[in-house]
Image 1: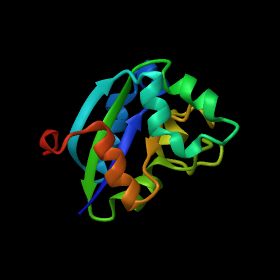
Image 2 (image 1 turned 90 degrees about the vertical axis):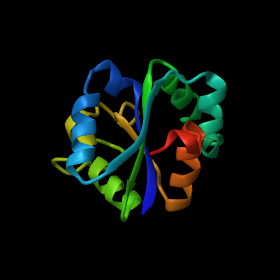
Image 3 (image 1 turned 45 degrees about the vertical axis):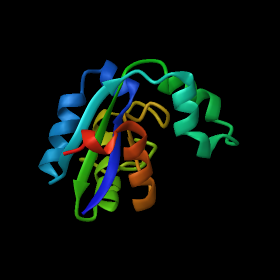
Image 4 (image 1 turned 30 degrees about the vertical axis):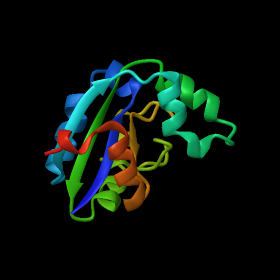
Length: 137
């Protein structure tokens, strides 16, 4: 079983679509092993997205991710990372396939409603960023 992280981003929470997203996750066979709402500090967002530090969109990403509440959802499933990436769709909702989370709920490439781990290794790291092992079921 793999673990992966879903973050329902500020735009998803502000639009109140988190219930729909969570339903899509469970309908796709994911087990939710941890979930919490939080508001990222600038330091937390910078740490989480440090891999993008040199990218031109980094400062905008940090501002966006600290602009409102987020919901971190730890997921478990066979082939979790690849299956979740397929479920959320392309980063740009205009390029996302019909039926994906981003096609249904995202407004733009930045306000794309959800974050998804891009590898099995990052899934473990990212779940660990938000959850202590004793918080996971």
